[in-house]
Image 1: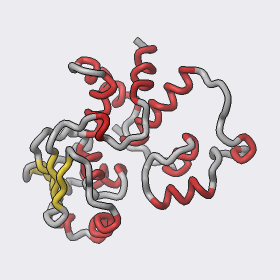
Image 2: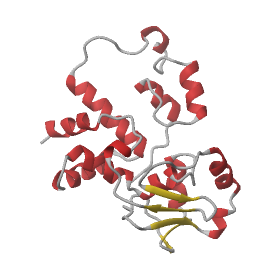
Image 3: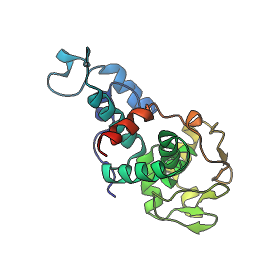
Image 4: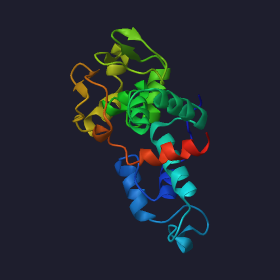
Length: 209
């Protein structure tokens, strides 16, 4: 499934909020606190009554952007989550959080989920010592994510790890010296730092069934 390659800050300006917590995007959103486009400054952000469908669609698109997945892939995750025991929305975001590219990003081995996807795709990531090049690989509890020796010495990885604060996520244990991270438990919704109302995403897909 293809990765999103468009302008990240522009996408976040459209939603009117910071979805990828990087200083670069924070500065852009503060400087241009209005939607993109020729008349963005004039119309500012939409106010007043919006349709339920429009609100649900925005939340679905935000979720897809944050995890860098396309519509067809997100729909598959939703169907899988719906078959699982428990709340569908919680299951959906837990599945997305367990994606290998996302956990490489959460561990601080990449500056963004897009950079993490590239690292995984170029076979620089190991799961329990074995190379895995599928960004969508779902990491299981107890599995150890690590970087290849070559990638540990990569200047960009070293810079990213210096810039990114140590992970304080309860489900991910990061050993920065060993360039490794272990998934300790299945991520729960309240532990996952994603500014999306996942229930609205569920309602969006329920409309289609």
